[in-house]
Image (spheres, rainbow, N blue to C red):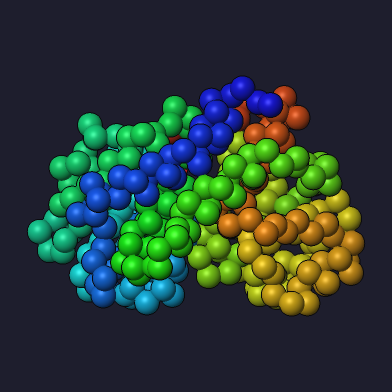
Length: 307
Ligand SMILES: O=P(O)(O)OC[C@H]1O[C@](O)(CO)[C@@H](O)[C@@H]1O
């Protein structure tokens, strides 16, 4: 078992997800209200969590929801609320959007550190300090932010007693933390992550984690896009990883061309933990330290961020 900071943070996710669900009432002022037209922004991992949340919210009937990389925010569109996800609270592109929108539209932020500029720029802030990380690569904060959003959607849905999807995901996460990683997947030359709906954001995040922590060659696509070109690189020694059930026929096509298929019955957010663990394992197998990724800092601060 890895003893890196990243591995320790990965292992704590069932606890922080449960804490997010438990502390939801303290955080709702920063979150969208049912029926609002909402834009969610972030950079890197935080953008991918924004994509996943936007799909969950809109497909669950909670209101129209778009997600944008903060640098690509479409200022010409009208939203009822804009919500930023930023672990550090200092990412330049996120701050630029919040600063430019100030006073024109209600804004919220989900962050880990209550001492940063995002606290002054957003109208309301959910501080998940219990999920903050020392690591450069994000694991725990990002998934805990998504767990908070999921818990909020659940609370708006007034689910029957006994139905608690975040708790179920946390239980699956415990399994994802202990299940052995498949040898074919650990030694793969290349991995393509596929998702659909909200799990497309998770596929993008899994691919990013492997690149950041392990310098691995990964790609990520909406599942049905795989047939439109990317499948050309599938073959022996290469893995196709599906978040959630892959569309019928796609799995057969992967096998037909000799690729390894990795699927799981776990909640997709819990399956992301398998990908995080894989990133650490692959990094360490190559003599890399996942705590010190190449060319990456914990927060990216630019002097020429678009405003
Ligand atoms: O959530 P934050 O702090 O705004 O940071 C996003 C950053 O996280 C990263 O995913 C690094 O972990 C970078 O891609 C990006 O700069």
